[in-house]
Length: 233
Ligand SMILES: Nc1ccn([C@@H]2O[C@H](COP(=O)(O)OP(=O)(O)OP(=O)(O)O)[C@@H](O)[C@H]2O)c(=O)n1
Ligand SMILES: C[C@](O)(CO)[C@H](O)COP(=O)(O)O
Image (cartoon, rainbow, N blue to C red):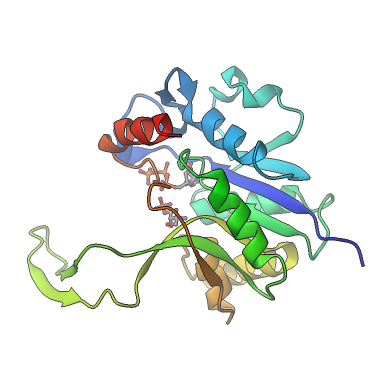
């Protein structure tokens, strides 16, 4: 019985609309380094991955200027319209290299603050789990449900007792994840993370508590926050 390998998929084909920046947010800089370079180096320096596939936008002209583009461990493919399309494209691009039961960790390019300790905790916790799982953090704020209009008036306060925020990496077996994403896609079931696809296929991924500072750079204020977090470790 061979030991399953670890593979990394990084969806980096978004346009960062909510960031309202002059370039896709994965190419904004923190301390002069591209966010994408920071994310990839933190992941590849922390976990012995057998390989890495980065999904890039077909219009991406920044990649050749990254440090990562010179890293022989990293391959690239063209992403898709939605994040899940980009992840599927990256998984299919790895098809000839990956064994069915190998583990794949999927991590957002826009999450540069992921902590090595959380990566080790995720891999160790899930290494013999039948399904896999994801880093997540318990909800710490009171949550309000609002109506559909543009004026967010409160409909109700949602019980947060059993609510967690999904983070990344999300870690699943290659074949199970490909099948789950294909099934969700073919069913027209829109998923915003890998766990949702696994759940749609009837699985119960395990949540592994991660640091709440593993933020996704999404809106302008997140850039300085990420810089501060990274300065602390
Ligand atoms: N079609 C897409 C959309 C998103 N992503 C990636 O998925 C991650 C999380 O998505 P999100 O934060 O939504 O990034 P964007 O889609 O770029 O942001 P926005 O929704 O503001 O445009 C990002 O690293 C993004 O590059 C991707 O690879 N392919
Ligand atoms: C995958 C994710 O980061 C987990 O919280 C999130 O679903 C990505 O959502 P986005 O709308 O693509 O940023």
